[in-house]
Length: 289
Image (cartoon, rainbow, N blue to C red; front, side, top):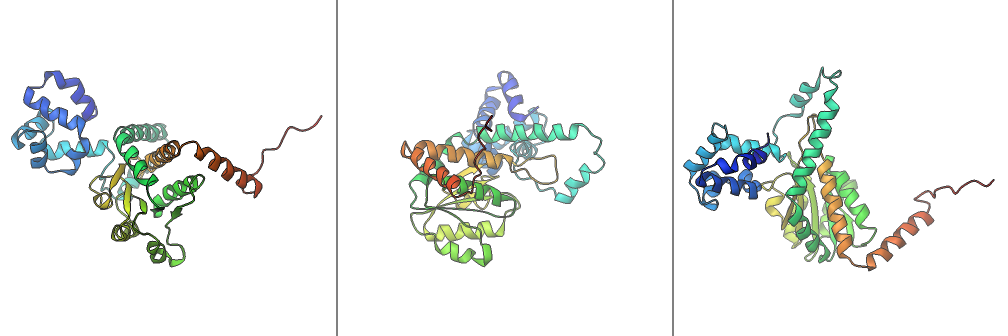
């Protein structure tokens, strides 16, 4: 049973002191993962000894093990090597639960990601719509997320640019970022060197930063004005980016909604141009009799 579900189920049976800790954990799961036990104790108006007793009451040896369990459920901070994870898959070719297991984990990832981003998505949308220009970057496995974000956003906003470093142009693209602009940066652990480089360049230029990442303690989040978290758990050997696509699509939905009625004309015009240019194939009409 998930930690949160267990807490809800057992909440009424906890002592008042433990209920206080349980309420804080339920309301602030990110804090549990990213802050020290002493900090959590102060914020939850509890003591380190009570936190340890709370963890043991739930069946964990101590607070670090409870913290690790919460992080695992959020899809954060997995350090297991890809090769080790792949080794666990070998020989499961006849295991008919393998595919079901992956889809179950993806559904859980989406649930976790949705719960922790309701406010942050709205805040990120407000930040981006005020920016003079929006730059977006993601490297390696995160490149498709950044590319799709730019591709769709460009349908109703022209001042959106992909930072991809193609042809060794990363430094040149970074110079295009100026004060008043915003950067959307996507990465998960182990974090891309280029992602941190672009984020630091944006910060130095005076840009506002939206980090789409796997942890509030990631190097991108620590530099960001707004952080959108996505869960990356997967029974496969490589972390999942499914929830990352979900939050970028949700962000685009909010941006379009906030843009007002004029967005409809811009999207209609963009779509028409795609068909007229031949980029989109027209659906054949019905054949004559």
